[in-house]
Length: 581
Ligand SMILES: Cc1cc2nc3c(=O)[nH]c(=O)nc-3n(C[C@H](O)[C@H](O)[C@H](O)COP(=O)(O)OP(=O)(O)OC[C@H]3O[C@@H](n4cnc5c(N)ncnc54)[C@H](O)[C@@H]3O)c2cc1C
Image 1: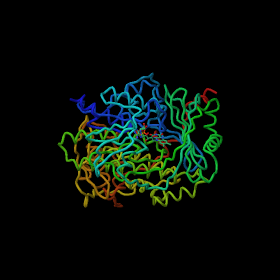
Image 2: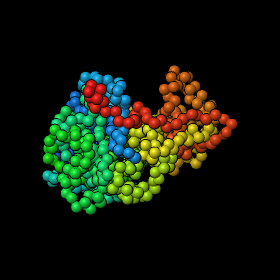
Image 3: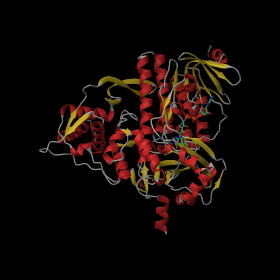
Image 4: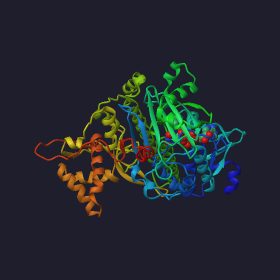
């Protein structure tokens, strides 16, 4: 029967696009529901080059769940331990590391997904990475059709009825997923409007290089992405393997137009203007594959319909400055797979499932766009682009005063990336405070340090549920929602809620945290920084009202000048060379 249905081009799920979003959704659907007929329709024949190579640690969890960590690790892609920036108020280089480079163990590869590797990410050659993932999807049972372009999406109102292929045949399915990236073929066919809640309008120009030096060599295969500002744009430098490096330039579209220069000229000018990158390329040769695209941030106004979903870049795009696109694509596709599995099981409310998928995707992408605005506005090195950055700030309503900047970032909410920890764009609260200090030159301080009485304020909020995804099933966990923000009764948020229900003075709240962890056999000192960051996030979002009682002690807390994750540049290769020299 299944074979017969497939021959007639009738499937349970039809996925348009075999990039990371398409293969993730297909693989997880087949992993948890092998009986489903899933087809992935990809217009290209892999391998094919694709921009978007520097990833974040969160993706590894998804690769592990897909069962393809070992295959990706065996490809020997560079291990990304963080990023080196020339970005902020001065030309000085600084790093954002997922784990302290000096603690990174020099272990041979391939390695299992454990220990330090839980905290690292990959930088990947997309021609190889996307093929590994698509082949994996096929191996697990998806029908993968390459060189198969969807040319038309047929619909009846909001319901997709068929996909028309280039060879004239059509494909029908119970569910359709648009994972077609910037093509957004289904999104456009349904007429979903896109919003651009920012004035960020950039273009990217990039090429691949053979035999470039790596800027940093940490252990076996460890490195960082290099992000270097010029007065009029910025450069990325991403080692993709022992020989191949991706080097790209991002400039405002208006600057590009008014320069009157060709992309190749601007690109060469940028490379020559940045000494660190030109040094690294001194012995390298370009592959002469110069490519250009516009990378305008946008957000789809709908992510779901009667029988369709958007995931990955078809649903929205946040400027590449944060290297977050692949993370958004993998995590959204995972959520689509879980949502379809639950829709088929029928045990959870359909409207709730669709609403939660749409709201969480929109909140996540919007928060990343806001974060990107913050980065651009906080960059004093953009000497030629001050008009541009002030326009971004004014469209966004962003003030670059340290305290205001932190509040503004928190407007998107701290529970969008993860329902467990307070973070934005994988940056925790301390790292965001440090960033605000770095960009503005001032320490905005901590609300939980200025105040010492903390009252939980849940009035006017609605009770809802957040979806917790595990082992192919969605579990409903209680949360509060108010003004578009979510407070999960889960993870670190739950501990703070519990402690504040019976304590309000700073000293009692701290004791409450200690007691909570001691009772569960954990070392409270390890958890305390996370509890304080979560409390600060909840004050910023209005879930906790903070006030000051002069007769009581406060929590001594200040933004450090540096941490293991954010600090002045420590260039291991260069540091070693200096020590030896
Ligand atoms: C300049 C730039 C730099 C970036 N840098 C980074 C970075 O450093 N880190 C990061 O994480 N992200 C980065 N990104 C974002 C990243 O590239 C995307 O988030 C990611 O590729 C999205 O994956 P996807 O699967 O949604 O789409 P894609 O990877 O684009 O895959 C879509 C697939 O759909 C196929 N397709 C399209 N139309 C059709 C059709 N009609 N029929 C059949 N198949 C079709 C395409 O051939 C393609 O294979 C960058 C993006 C840009 C523009």
